[in-house]
Image (cartoon, rainbow, N blue to C red; front, side):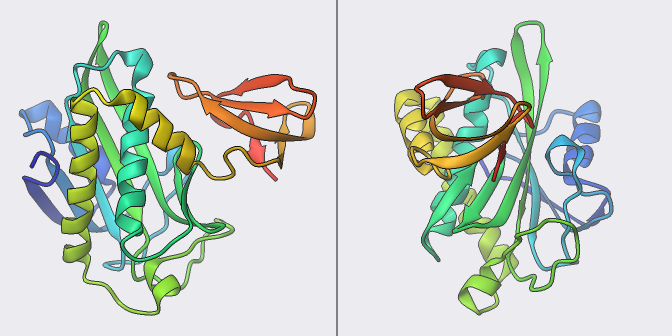
Length: 245
């Protein structure tokens, strides 16, 4: 087992990703090491967003990988395997789990988890990748501006042991990482597209030009979302260049 073979727990941190960044500056850290905390004072989401989590109620972790077999231009595949691993875990409890591009995990139309991936690139190689995951487990009340949060407890109406959740999540993440190490990239791409929120379904989106009806047809190796409109035109979007309506 790679992911989860070493776990470092700290009761409180500013952010697990920041802790890992500082740790890597002082020593070599075993690949697959997980940093876990009960509470983050400066929890971060993608694009500078904050991540809300009640103390001790949810899974707040970061893990370190050294995927030097991946070209920096292809690093989005790490987001794919992490997203799939979280979906695998959640499907042990519930259905209708999907990946909302680029970094959210949904149950039906509600957000249950977020991912923050930060890569350290030296020359033309990835030196390391830090993966932050926030997964809502037992929290019932959310006070931030996130419009549609949900947790396992809200879905299943029962409490969960956080340590057991971490152990089982590590297993599914590890399985997906080994799929990448085995060079099963076509299968990963296929599964990722099949698990995307609203993939292939006609839905409404908004970009710099306004709202339009389209359907997700693919995600490029660099992570750009590709959407086809009703006229057959295909558009490619980076982070925050398109939103779901």
